[in-house]
Length: 128
View 1 (spheres, one colour):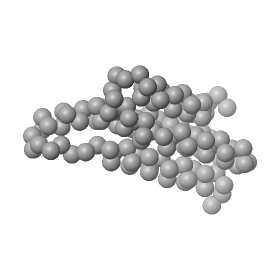
View 2 (cartoon, helix red, strand yellow):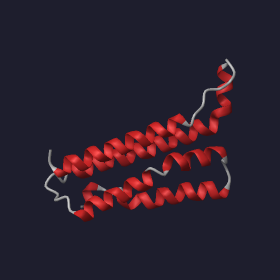
View 3 (cartoon, one colour):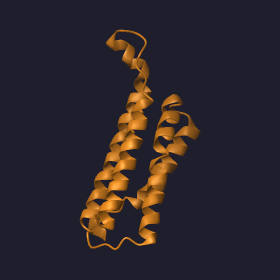
């Protein structure tokens, strides 16, 4: 296994764990009617939005590294990827806090800050 594949595998594993942790925060309703699910509406919507964002990051990360198989994995590349993953791992917490306090400034700002920090790591392959 070369270093690019190793870095991709590590990233895939971390992202899979992050998505799993987010869904664990959605609790089954206590009632037995479909309408009872609506009480978890904020959790569902936040999870779906976060899942789609993380999926976008994952797809772009894969495209980036598949287009750069010749890339030398230097310590700087490894650390940049680790910082990207560090902030991705904050998403289960940020999503949960936002879902519990929807329309509140601080949870929204924290969630948005995580998204803004991760954005530069989500480079467009065509721009490289």
